[in-house]
Length: 208
Image 1 (tube, helix red, strand yellow):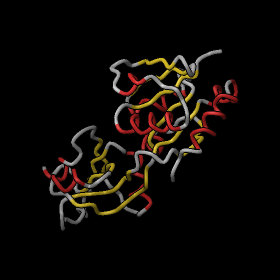
Image 2 (image 1 turned 180 degrees about the vertical axis):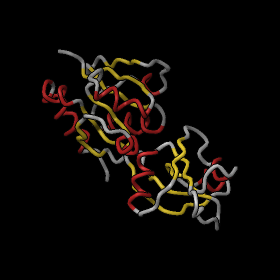
Image 3 (image 1 turned 30 degrees about the vertical axis):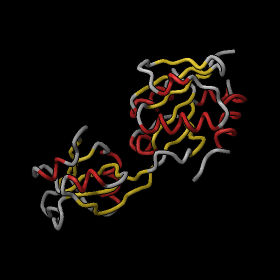
Image 4 (image 1 turned 45 degrees about the vertical axis):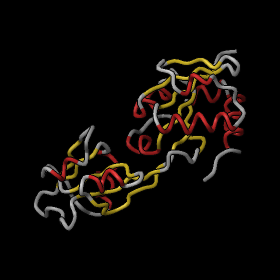
């Protein structure tokens, strides 16, 4: 029987998903928790884990190099991928919000918004009937309003600590985010029994 391949992002999502899988009764190697390897086998379960960047997981699933992926809803909203979303795992809770310097209105002439979620940000402001210039950044988004690059940022907020430490405040909450179990459509047909079993076992552990 072919191994079931699962792409998981490193970091918080990985840690919480690993714990969920163990609670669901899967016999996973302990070294998976702190391994520096990019591919880790769980031979007792005939599962292979691919450790990837969060933004890359849906691409791996879409192109069929893995059967299943665990990805944040933020990534799913930003990138249209041909995958099935099977289960809200209820882990790695956070949300996307707008933020900026305190008591600073948006520039009425040429409002600028910095973000690593250009699609989410564009749709949000378009929905409000506001035309903004999107500046796509990949790191230190909080810096943009501090140095005058943008009026607002659109970013993930978990505790709000990073915003506070940089003198920013949250303005509007856009959408709640949790991690989702996604599957390649072809894999779902070919390995439906194993995937359905996995979903069923995980669903019993999910707290929404």
